Image (cartoon, rainbow, N blue to C red):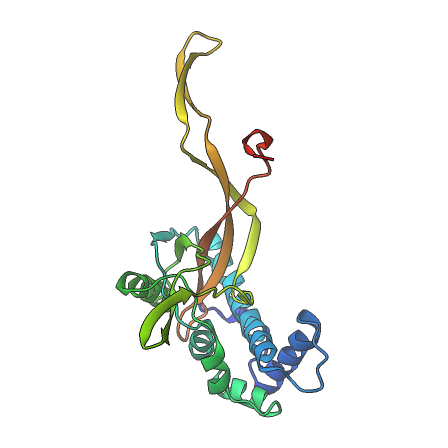
Length: 254
């Protein structure tokens, strides 16, 4: 996928990255702080780096379409991605540019990286294996799309209280996730429970249908998965369960 006319147009120098960082801080996040807040600086930097992933993402999809390439779909209940900022910066070769962009803010890349919350999408070998598989395929320029679940509480926080280990919910999405893009046009109705109803259609054919179900909508969120030192960026699509538009007033005790 590395062709001369497919090179991204966004600059990767420290100056270009600093300009984009400031733009996202002021306009995307709407911040006018006299003193920069680290949590918003982390988000602004994430958006600036994500912009560069978006270009490669688009070029990767266009290359697949033009070449009519087959795509691999990888399904997993867990994707232990780790911290997306450090992974994206390293894979895009932006370490020096990022340090230069952060210099005027009196902050280092390491300080921001350590403050990023791990994506709560898995907790074990299965999730780490799935994440490594996606990374490796992108690095090798293989068109792969991962599918998983967008957990709101994928892991637990462990604390020590009165000498005992206590597990608490880890709401990793509390402050939002700058690496994901909501896809409201990719919504699927998912049916649970219900029963099978057999009937005869208009032409006398015996048919069956699934009725009296409890439905939810699955809403798609896409995350870019960049390869190391390559233009290829693949996709991890996560599904979130949401309520349907219908509300059964008869089931309410009110």
